[in-house]
Length: 161
Image (cartoon, rainbow, N blue to C red):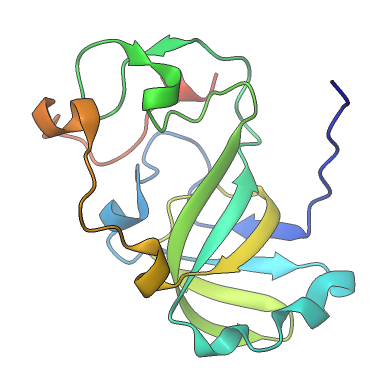
C-alpha cells in the first residue's frame, strides 16, 4: 500500500499541556476554551464557517507513541479491542472533536468544550450538521453496560506514552 502524507493546516492551542487533566470528550470539558490557528495559505477556506455553532476538528495526537490492540478505556475497567474505543494511541493517531465555535478572527477559530492537548497539529475542519450527524437509533456496544462512572472525566498518561 502507498504511504499517506497529511499536511497540517494549522495548530490547536488549549490550556491542556499533558494528558493528565485533559477532558476525555468535548461533552465533559465544562466549557474549556481553546483556539485553532489556521495557517495563512488555508485561511480562505474559512469563508462561511462563521454561521455554524459547532465544528469538527480533525487533528493528530502528537504526544502518542505506539499502540496496543487491547486497551482499558477511560470509561471501563475491562480490556476492549482498540477499535471499539476512542483511545488516542492508535496505528494512525488521529482524533476528532466536536467543539463549539465562538468566533473567528482573521484565521483563528475560538472554540469551547475543547478536549485536545495543546500543540496538536490541525488536519481538517468540518462543519457540524445536526440533521445529518445525529443518529437517533444508535447502539453503544460495551459502553452501555460499562462502569461509566469511573470517578474521572479526564485523561491520564497511560494513553499517550
